[in-house]
Image 1 (cartoon, one colour):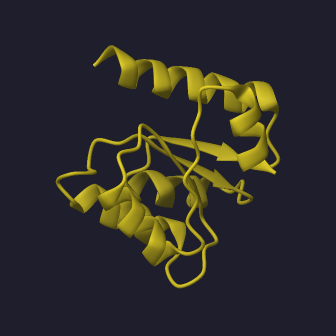
Image 2: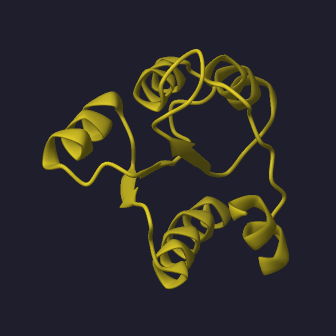
Length: 111
C-alpha cells in the first residue's frame, strides 16, 4: 500500500526489498535518495539493516526513516542508536509521511 501511495505521489520511483539482506544489497547497488525502513523484516531486522547500511561508505549518508509499529521510547532509542535519521510510528498520517518526504528528498536535491 505504501509503495502505491508513493508512486501515485508522482516523481518517486520505489525500489522494494523483501528482506533485510536484500535491503542492504539494494542500498549498496542502487542509487537511492531516501530509505524507508520497517523494523520487522525477514532474515535481518530493520535495526540491524540500518546499522549495516550506516557502516558502508557508499550508503552511510542516505537518510533512513524507520517506520515502526513500536511506539515505546526504547524502540525509538534503539532505532536512533542504529543510525536512523527519523522515526515514524505506524499508523501515521499521510501528511506526516509527506512532511518527511519533503524534508529528506528536498535536502537530497539541494546537494
